[in-house]
Image (cartoon, rainbow, N blue to C red; front, side, top):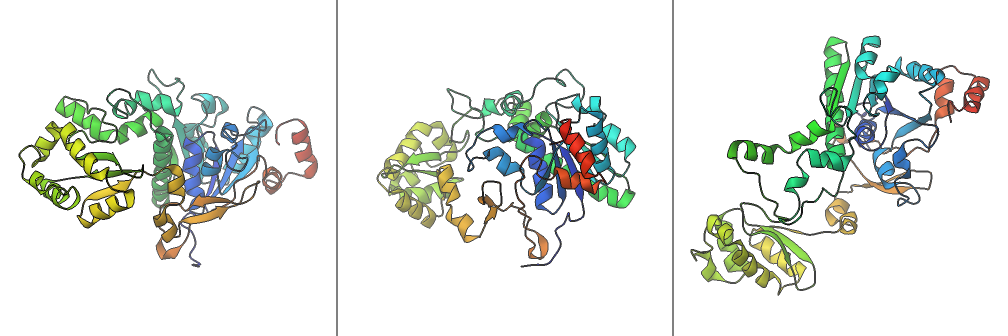
Length: 398
């Protein structure tokens, strides 16, 4: 095991966060070695704690997005709670918040206000639609932002649009917040000053919509919804196999089609047939193309289909379930699984995908119980046991 320090060792992050976007961003910082202090409401904490009980009695979203953090249960609406927060901020490097639009400003903890007060602090505001504009105070749940950003309009089948099966808007905002913090810390290293960082879910997901956006703006047509198929490439879809599985394949050029016809479909005459020989022809006759491929793969088991496709140099994949992902042989072979401590015992979790220099491994810290670190954090600020008991009795901390 390497003894190299993690890249963010020595960095302290204070986060007033909830749901997914900010917590997932700060989890990336914790994985890279930062100390992350998660400030939660005393009455239940981050509401994502109650989304479900699927992770051994804990909420799956919360377990995923909050490992490696310390939990401080603190009422920020009480002036004594705000005083505690500022005590933490005086020694912090980064602050992240994703309260409802306007709530942080009312408390005086928006990024601009905090950076004016603490010049070395990198402060991040994560919101649904950003400050200003007609949507600034609009509620911004992930599904709603997926719709506003046009993602749903290009996802699904021709008959029915669908949202992404993961919180794509939250994750997009989280990753831009993560990279924004790293960039701001790098700048602080040369200028000595932190500064505000603003991230909106809409703008983050709009950036991810780059291909259909540019296609529509500059080509005049929105890409059509094609399910698992591709709008301009054929064959490119999932096909049922004889054992009930589905195998996806993608033919990217006409050379590959010729190999597919000869070595997988065992229909060599289709290699040069004008109705199939070019991608343009195959796309025009997509139904016939898909029928030919489906007919051939439908006679094979999934293992044999994949073997033939790979032997012919055709890109392919299985249509895995989430359970199959959890048992994926590639993840196992690359030793990507670890155990993370929680209040209900250890739970499996994936290492983050960033491979660190020197063989260093991300810190897979425990998932905190609500208020688990409240007393220790308050004592570190110089509070006596009597003072902590008083605040707890008044509901300021938990």
